[in-house]
Length: 88
Image 1 (cartoon, rainbow, N blue to C red):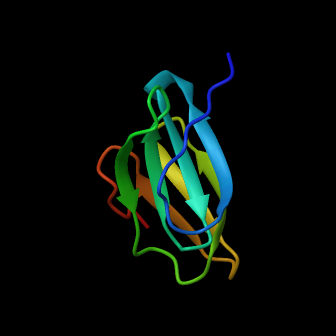
Image 2: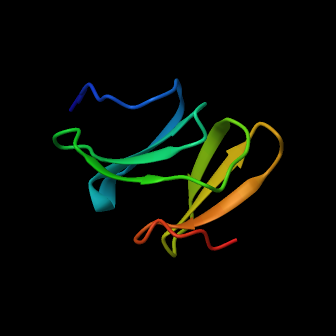
């Protein structure tokens, strides 16, 4: 099933991961933020910010709920998907 929605996120989206078992989408952008969206209706669940000093270009998800993001400067940041807190 194809889904699309429009949001008012800042920056250009550089990566997106659909987290089907959690019904959310994680988007990375060149504004150094990660947005967690409800992929049923496009509503913003939360922003993750403060971990990157350059645009984010890559996202990944570990089986334990850790969201991994990579910046253009080589920095890799680990986030707790449930709280938005930096874990490393």
